[in-house]
Image (cartoon, rainbow, N blue to C red; front, side, top):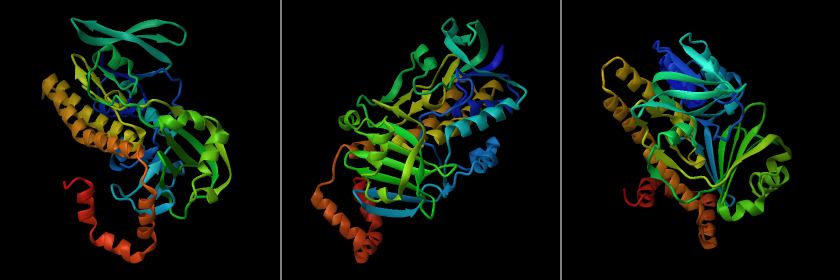
Length: 389
């Protein structure tokens, strides 16, 4: 019997395995993939210290993705730009690199067994307590694995969450912007590596440089437009970008590297994350729309907190309920404000600024005295926008 079975070996599951494995616990880390490949993700990493604690920061930096230190926001050709505010730098890193680094780090820990190309069929239970998994290997062999605690880190469509009937404490019924990602060659980079955000009518485009002189570009399209735009076709994806006035001049015979990955009908949820013998991590626990740009950091930071609470439980310092309440409190204090903020941002995407107001916005962008006045009154303006809070 293992101390922990972790279902899902991407950023949440692999990082949790590392934190727990270093404490000496026996762990089975399992996933259906043969190796971590591309996945639909925001590709934005803002945290720094936690990746140093994981021991992969040097590998992340060696890939060649430039540190992002600026943010540019473009609304219908009106541009605002600044140094990053919430972090000193961000990194645009492909998930096949990040997840590979984490998996390789986990494999170096002697107490961790890694089982890939294995699909979880269902959970094993005794007296309604989860005691393990029943899984099927690539060659069709079905086996049972037992553990003191089973962790579902298997993504937003988590089979573990579904099997235990995890209830959503927060959930959006509305289907939000569809998201299409691609890696593009031959976008002329800005002199200072920058995270670029484009409001384009009811849609959003996010663009940032990654490794090998590529840019990761996400087009987030409204449900009314996604079918007509047909963004899964490379020529349509590039054509849409060419309509962005301040980006188009930098498209120098652009070419899409690999496949376009897309997700339609996105909703957000925060699940009740634990029960008798089981706990959820990463997107299985809480999934926000990619417009929030915080999914990777959330998954890994909450995994670290989960490892702390599980260690306290295993050492007898806390009972199961108290440990899981501590994990839930940390998760909610971090993620619930982001959940609400992302919904406010998505609601803005459904509205178009009147053309008359766009003309006034041009004044802020072109009259230096107006911008200076905005800076002098910025605190009051932010308070007004936030409803006086």
